[in-house]
Amino acid sequence: MQHIKNKLIAMAVLLGVLVLGLSLIGDLVQERQDLAVQVQHDIARSSSGSQKIIGPILIATFEDLELGLVSDPKKLKADQPINSRVYYHKALLPETYDFKTDLETEYRQLGIYKALLYLAKGNISGRFNLPTHWWTNTRYKLTDVKLVVAISDVRGIKNGFSATINNEKFELLPGTGVEKLGAGAHITMTPQWLKQQKNIDFTLALNLQGMENLQITPVGKQSEIAISANWPHPNFVGNFLPHKPVIDDKGFTAMWQTTFFSTNLPDIINSCIERGKCEALNNTTLGVSLVDPVDQYLKTERAIKYAELFILLTLFSFLLFEIFKRLSIHPIQYAFVGIAMAVFYLLLLSLSEHIEFNTAYLISSVSCAAVLGIYISGVLGQVKHGLIFSGGILMLYLILFGLLAAEDFALLMGAIFVFSVLATVMIMTRKINWYQLDED
Image (cartoon, rainbow, N blue to C red):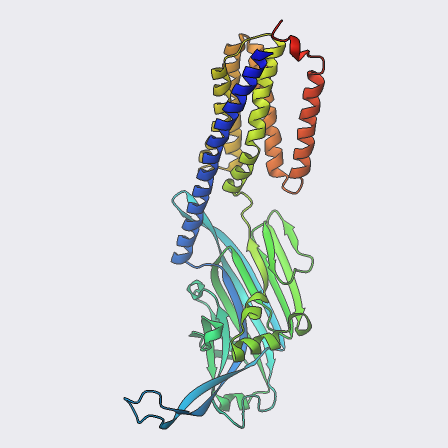
């Protein structure tokens, strides 16, 4: 019995050392993943990042003169009254709002890392119903009226971004003119021109580049948003889900419909523009995130979580070989087997950075299984034993691949697998008299 105890102690020490090595490989995975994210940020800085669109909105700006006291006695006499200019904004949202765009995706590569970009081509159209004298105010002086579109990353605006209002071409100028809305574009309208209009029908030709994520704020009283793309892995984000999206291998098509009853946009917009409380506006969005399903770092990280169990099963099966075949296997040979199992994950990480993950997994698993099969054949003295052991290793890697692929059922499959292995070992060893092993 002392012999078995010594082997179990040696296996425990070896497993502890291997766990330390696996933690270092896990740290390496995290480091490479952080580097990949940093490269994506570098690509975003050189092109454009995620995009969020708010608008168009009509913004009227009013000016007021407020009486105050001089606080700097060096310029004027202390406590001398002066007039200061204060500006106020008033917003009008469209009655109808239609946003239609098609996303053309492409990868932008930097070294071995890449980021997913899209080019959004489409139109934003709708209608403003102008209330009588909406732009007038008995107390304040009207300075200008702008049609404003807020765009989170204006570097993504490409040629062809134009506007047509009531069948007239208007020039889009940079900036929103409203600090709280951030960057974007605007069109300035004169009060004289507005007085001649009952409604404002607008169409904006959209040509916008972004990275991975596109979000829209549905500003219309009646809003319809349609987004399609040649990307088959969408993740719909925001406060609203699309109505019956169509997703296939070639891409997806999604449509949203909202009203002021569901968005409460008039109060939210005014709260942002008039009182500076813009958190609700920033959160009232819908859209899509283009998910890359082949994240080799995430899959490698998940594979490492099963590494301890798989190495333990391998070493224990090695021990069963020793018991049933009445062989004497040195702890150093156990160590070589365990190290080979750990190196599999390092090989998987390095290969998956250069080739497809599934191909990298196949090469890594077959290579490790072949090496272990050749080694076991020499240790146990028979090729048959090496083939059986190599086949068992391949079976473990196949089960691990299934666990990585079945994200929603990974826990269930893992639990069934562990229970099956435990039951198999108990049945195989049920007649072993552990007290007599050393005597035999």
